[in-house]
Image 1 (cartoon, rainbow, N blue to C red):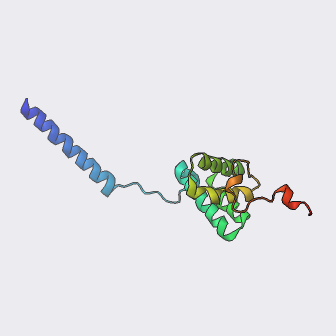
Image 2: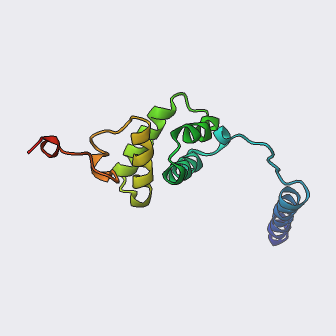
Image 3: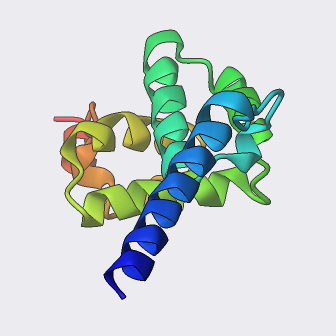
Length: 130
């Protein structure tokens, strides 16, 4: 009985070792020319934040839209608004300000985003003549 269990364990460990070696060393998976749409959602969100940070530098909303198109989203404006509001609800502080700036440039500034604007909107009383 001990001999059978010992042989089984040795065979199992040898099979796992050979499988790992073949899978990682001899025949690893190689991805080439993958689209941004194939990224996991978390990485798509991170890419969107990088685009928003790039928008903060160059202030070119058209370039930001061109950078976001390869994500393959049906409506980029809704996607940016939803992602921004999700970051606000999760208190993801480092990503909120650039995302709010991008959403505002796209015309998607919501009341939830107002307090995170880099330049506050003028108040109606401030516009009135003295």
